[in-house]
Image (cartoon, rainbow, N blue to C red; front, side):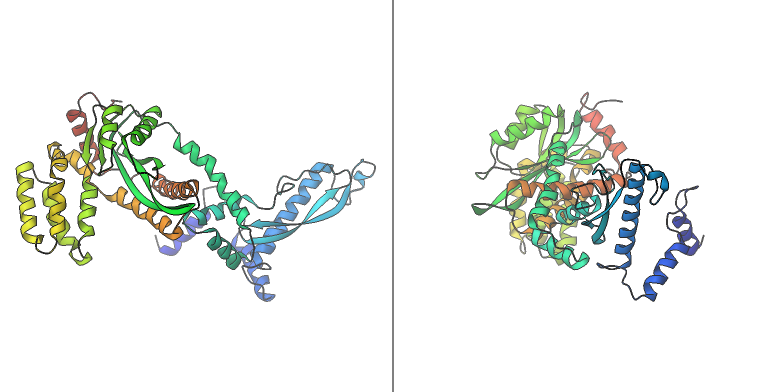
Length: 428
């Protein structure tokens, strides 16, 4: 099938369903716009005029339904109510500000539904603001963008009210029920700047779980106390996860978070606490010039894919011989964390592969760091959580449409988890 034919087939939509605007009507509208020198976008552009015409026509039909007779129909005489002109109203839409003439009735009983009384924004406009906010744009940036693209001026209070609608959704997401068992849970941290009197660096902790289907999902977001994490803080976080249904976790991967291993031992006594290999790799590459990342990563791989502890120790010595002179800090890092790393080597290769696969974690971290870097600082903890949640939601919506995204080789990994953690992985 040719590309042209394929594009034509996609335009047709589902079988038996005709497009609302066919090519002939589109050509007529564009022809008139070109003949009159009208722009496609802008306050007086074609899309604004079409939106205005459609909305006013819909409002007129609503008024007809309310009164029970068409305009100028003699049947309306003596009906007890009639049309009474219109009221000017400006609404914000996806194509900019549109001036409408909203019809009135003499008795004042007409309640339009297309554009309700008191409504100044169509639903799509709110979604546009939230989408910009989710990308880490500041209130000032959003106002400038809307002014440049749509010629509308919105207040900072409006943007705050629109984005505050996310707070309820965030609370619902943060308390949603979770699976009973997660074979692996990663707990990571990133730093954000929050202005609370003074600007301080605060840690935001992200828990990512791999479920029994091999799918990865963000379980929650928490902003740590300004005094730093502690066993008490982690006990609260993990107890929250347990209260949402997580009765057991086979492996919890984390990295140097104070008090977390002790809290894990209390909440999930059977869980194996593993130093996160992803974090070790990331920390190692942080010391190296980018042009050396590929060969360095290859030598690091020899360590965490070694058959046993002796082979891993030999690979570490090879790493020291190859890179110790240039990057001694990397060798020091691995030796300092060797005792915390080596339990990883006892897992079957299929289980190890799930733990050190970095795609989701790196993708998630890159997205979260991007939106926080764009903002620079946040006025409150809630503002930071709103932006981070929206970034997570965008990523999960993308992954939801791509349902094939799962941990590579999950079927073999699930068998290995079931055998290694006997009796702890639920069966269908």
